[in-house]
Length: 371
Image (cartoon, rainbow, N blue to C red; front, side, top):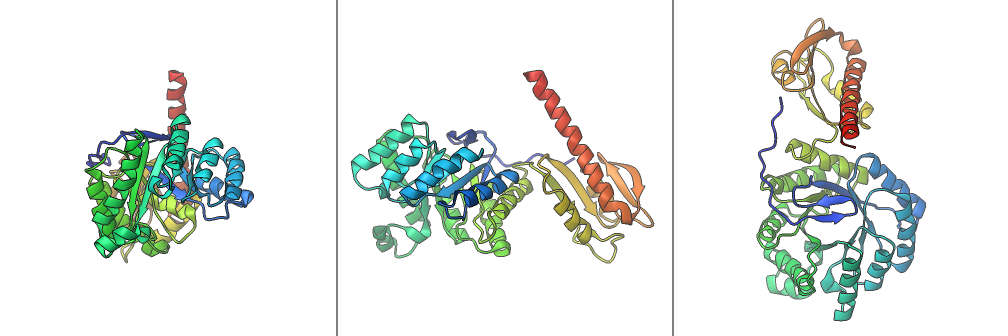
């Protein structure tokens, strides 16, 4: 059967974003950000509900004004997923959303201004057990760092991040996470690798402004994959110029490929060739569309011919190997029965849903025994 991930993760201090642990031995969380007008409560809630439906662990919401802060209060009441408020410069907005129950503040302490304002935000976060996310971006480095380095570099990103870290350290506030994002893969990876050796706090990974759905997915997969293979990263966001729901889906696919998360179906499918005995691409498109609601982990192989099919199907819970006149179905690595191509999609969906129901029942039994 499929093996466990060989990745040894960096040991980091664990913080809590609402009810989601980040860092330590917690699963790497997957998050996205709303792109609606925050003041449009109905639209923002609707989008967050869509993200909840695809199992987003955390959602970030931009709160650029006091009006948006009041809207945030109403949004928070209507959703279940932990919310991070994205705030720049205005400490009063941070204090307001802290009052309204925000789960994390994305605010750089060095950008708030006077010492008393910084202290007010940190004190509010401490009093209400709200973590802070320091977020450094290559596109918005401080002017003196731009002059010092001439252009964004990994050293510049890390120096900017450590300025904000030092402020939190000065106030003995340790419940924070840090990101050092860039749109350039090598720049971002270099910065994260350096920062990982300097602090114990969790790291929020992202290749910022990665691009549209296809290009951004590739760039994020390469960049995040390099870091995750190093054991670096406690929470991730795939930044796409696309529907935020796609960010969550791609994020989980990246983690599944590295065996770091197992939410939903892990499909192993051949690209198809002239040896295929059924329409592999059409079958996969239909199965993915039909089974988008499944969050229980199931390993499924869909292979069009008998060359690689048996080997792949013996390693998964449910597999199909294309053959003529009938395709072979494998259950838990063993040949079980045959099915005609015209019935294959419905048949596979039924087998997968049966397996999901069985797993859910077993999980419920365990929970009931522990209660």
